[in-house]
Image 1 (cartoon, rainbow, N blue to C red):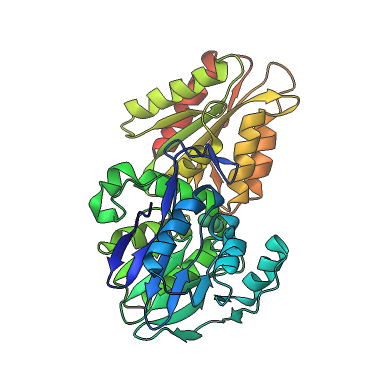
Image 2 (cartoon, rainbow, N blue to C red; image 1 turned 120 degrees about the vertical axis):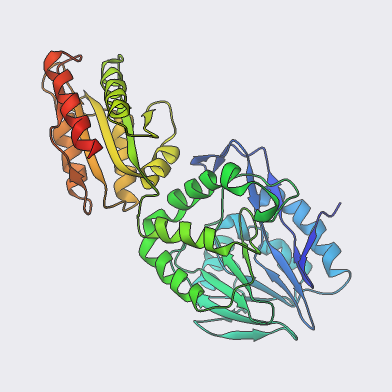
Length: 395
Ligand code: FEO
């Protein structure tokens, strides 16, 4: 049975949530599920704005059939060719053979790559337009937010920005599809951050370019492909995106990440956290990198101004999970953080040297002194180093 909502006159939300999904993109845990949005504009011409994931395609097809109410589908705008929005294209072409696909040239090529279908599509470029009747679609390229073929679409008559993956979030939705219908700050901001950081975070420069294009538009509604829809309070989400895209921390505090085999490196991390608390630093966070999925750790690394990495030496290397995490930080282009290091090694300690090497390939990462060295466990000398490091971090 259909389950739709008219988000403004003649623009319908057709989305659905998947609460069974464990890993989005088979990578990111989504304990609260995942939402997929797409939209239909009803005008002289009918136009579908993006498709949906296979997992919820039955709901989507029911929704589309209901909203079209016997009309045909004239256009499908494919803003993004990732299969979580496109796996329904072959089925749509069977149901609506006259449907014209509107997309970037690269997206049209990707339809062939994914589905071996050569569509006679309408390739659009920056500032191309498409008239639907009363609605006019204006297309803007948004390469690498999140893939190279991405476009976003601004409907001028209603001030509606169809923003593709931008402004999305992890998490299923529950009827309240507008951000102003939920306690977004408390319940959704952290999952919006984790979504942005992990999915698009590498491409801050490109996200900034999109934000600049958006700033020139008179936006009255933002309709993303995941997460809540925005019809007010745009400043909040734009301000967050501006910070995330420029790698600007939201919180001036210390996040400590440890990789510990028998608990001694963890002990050093906890001692450091207590020293920081006694020096008046608030909101200190400590994470075991073996326990917490690195997508959450990365999100915190974007959020915090100051990061401490504490790692045991393992196979003459950084402890495995810490290595994965540091590589992930580097791959997402995080920059401009103050960093503290704690290494542990019972013999031939290598973690500090190897962590310094990875951090040295990143932009504007300032390693504070002293780097703390443990030989198996915290002793008086390393206890004193931790206090010194806490003082340097607290500054
Ligand atoms: Fe939601 Fe990049 O796809």
